[in-house]
Image (tube, rainbow over all chains, first blue to last red; front, side, top):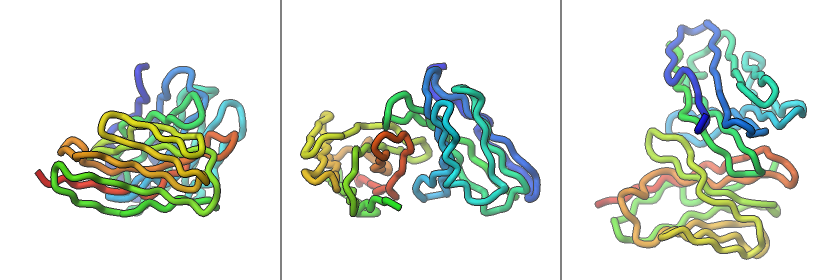
Length: 112
Length: 111
């Protein structure tokens, strides 16, 4: 596609439910990133995939969070047993060269 | 781990005034990037600097990378209301794609 696509754009879920967020990176981009942005705050690194290397999961806040990526294609971020503090915008980005990341529009997650 | 500090956190300027945001690191950076996030939007890549002392310009925006590669600045000349948003610096480690962001400077422009 022309840009990074994320779905859904908005998600409201009940506390305790699991959610899956999807990211379609720009075709050919080897690096893919997930960030969390709470209201009015900066970008909190969650996880990053680079080619066939093992993902860097150092930013995942708890074992309720996990992410997968199929080859150099789609990625899904899964949050199990959601909590209210998980409410945020989840941003995905991809890049072909070091730096110059292209971001999707984000998924706004609200846990009620 | 390595971090960058952005200052100021907030800046309010009258339209037409200049604006500068700074990004400082305690260690040498291999590169620095700048992103802009409009209110309600997503971060958009502006520029990447990699060389010591590098200066790049984009219309009214001037980006600098310090001689020691430990600091960077973004300067906007004669701000306009379209400049409103949060400006983030970011860096990736040498040979790595991992991208770490500063906390950003939120710019408000008073018409």
